[in-house]
Amino acid sequence: MKTAVSSYSFSRLINDGAMSQSDCIERAADMGFDAIEFVDIIPHDGSSQQTYAEKLRKKADECKIDILNYTFGADFLTGSGGDVNAEIERVKKQIDLAVLLGAGGVRHDATNGFAKDKREFRGFDNALPHIADACRQVTEYASDLGVHTMVENHGFFCQDSERVERLVNTVAHPNFGWLVDIGNFLCADESPVIAVGRAAPYAFHVHAKDFHVKSGMHPSPGEGFFKSRAGNYLRGAIIGHGNVPVKQCISALLRAGYNGSISIEYEGMEDPILGIRIGLDNLKRYIKQAEQEV
Image (cartoon, rainbow, N blue to C red; front, side, top):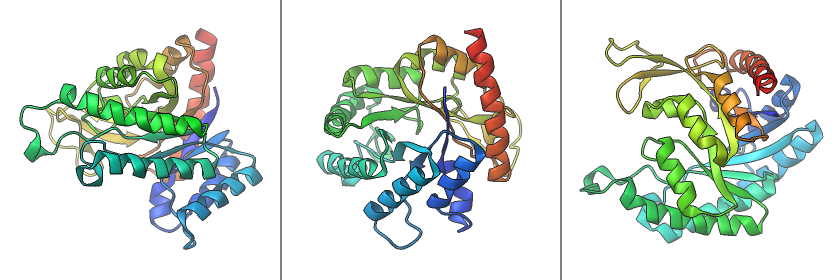
């Protein structure tokens, strides 16, 4: 199993202007990652997204590191002003960027759910046929370009493992799968181990993420924490420092036959470079231990 890092892990440094996405490639290679993935295309030099994507691909080639995935937002219920056809076309243009980037995979969202003022008596079952049809149209387009598409357990409404499994099986296309984020299940108050066990057979890609978790029964821990859907407190952690059973999740993936890459998506409060470095050391150790056990 190869290791990768998401550009999201460097987002604090990118937002502060201390690093560019191009810098992330060189840093990831120097740290010993096999690959990198990008969240959005953020030109630091005033160039267009298309031109910058090509520059990032060239930089990756120079640094001898793969660009394996491209991530961006989407919402097939409320995106593009609620015009699903316009949202599908917008997503297709993002897939064109992935081709320029040289990424073999794309992660887009499905939906954040119905708008609160229009929810009425509608839930996931009502949304499923609509978002599945849109995901299928997108993945058919991407398939012709040699790009796999996937959704992530992300965004509360489409975060539970049971819901994402139903979406993948409703789309029912060999080019469409699951970006399994082992930490994000906690945002929906679901056991990561149980959820990864369900998700593993559908995994196209994996995010390693860790969280510190505190019960919502206790007073707020303060700055840095956010609430899960049920009101528990979560804070991003260095891989191995939090409450996510990372090694056990990796074991479940291996038992299901997953042999792709696993990307660190770090969002802790510690210095990003320190957090990523320690997380990589721990992740490599967990992968080795899991491979010996399976």
